[in-house]
Image (cartoon, rainbow, N blue to C red):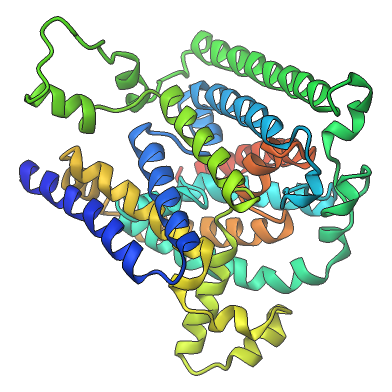
Length: 420
């Protein structure tokens, strides 16, 4: 079975490149597909994700993922600064989000939903091949939540107006572009912005260590098996290493990456994505479009859907594989499947999370719709409202992180009450 999985994994790799190159309408769509595959592969092989930053800390006491996210946020911002320095930042599609009640409420709802579905916008795509029942229910209601939130996102002042702004931020979504605060630093504000980000990251890391220490002192720390496995990865014995051997295959295709390795890869993919498309990584908006397509399948016209969502009918009429972010999201699913298959753990992983009680399915639905609505109020998920804004020097990303963490705490307490 393991060898069959390995073969299927490489077949999928070949199909992704052959069909992607021949069937997608443009080269940029093919590029999006390849980037998506890379993101899905790295997230899965590194046992990483954004939802775990809060969930793991609350459920196990481990804050390693939160600390590693700070590492990724900072190096991604450094790479973005290198890309933007000396150029007009308004020529890029930077995700400078507004600072308002929407990002707070959206972050709380998103963090609340993550605790029930144990995933996020990108994580639910990974989990379609690693935890299908949970991911499928979550995704359906996630799509519904995004769709229901479209008209609010399009029309509500508390979602679109910003309490504070900055000169360059004003030219995007009226948010704060941190380099605007540090124009005196002699490096267009990027040096000061990076120092500012570095200090925030260190504060979060310090608080994470204090929280983890407290959990250990109170005997509530259990740790995360996947993280413990990563911590015991043995180094390569180069003296006895053979290229064509089972050990070599395991090293190249099966053994888990450390979180740091995974996040370095993701940061580099983010830089390439920014460099080629001029914009960052988003995932959640297409979910609402997919829900609209489902409604069209039941006979509701695209014009009626457009009237409700305050979006163009063409958005819902566009074929799935012509929508850039949909193609990229499909790539994340494929990338996750490729790792699990080439590692020979697809069946084991898929079947380990396949049975649930009816009450849990209801909670997955609650998690999905909460996260979906949260993304519209906050103008993104935890790649579109957290990672990309922080990497693009938007102050809003940090506000979303605080709100998401608060929502996670509330959701965790509610989850414990519901489950006894």
